[in-house]
Image (cartoon, rainbow, N blue to C red; front, top):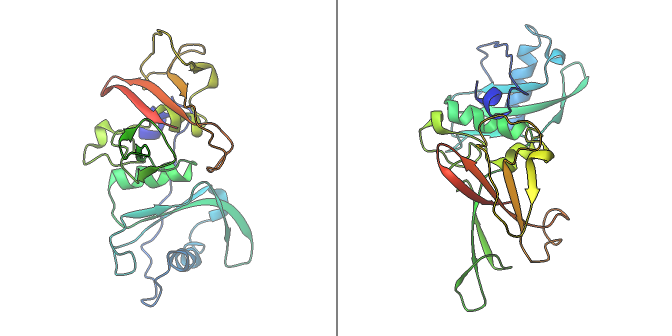
Length: 231
């Protein structure tokens, strides 16, 4: 229900569970764990019929304090017979709804929801500069950040919904100023209804991960009110 809700009914999951399988005690690397699990699972299921593989495993010294891990999008997985397939991969060491949804959101192509603190040359807080600190997981309103224990309030921010292809570009405007009506990000709207406003940040940013300019994004979430993010 979570992904069906945040994707406006564009995405849902149908899963098949197989196992339990006992893995060799000397296997520690997560990809080795997955390979060993796949070797056993192919006896029971045709993995080539699936787009996503999720391994649920008990926490061990190998996993440390990591609750889960997930690939960004799909990877090439080699089956025991040598055939290669493209699937997303996730490892769940803490069988908890928030962890599962977080890793699957990675599998759909989403990146972490962080927070930023920026400072000017005098050490004062600034809107955005080259002197910024990124705090991973510090986006408190997004499943790709840290949602505490309230799964019912978890969601995806507008920038992530756009990143995953669920929020249409016609529902997004780019403006420097003005007064606009903005609709709840959690309710599907027809094209042209504004659900995200992008405000350009005046700083050259091509040295970052992409050639896209940076924006503040403004959205309205009925559960939290107006949210301002960096994207």
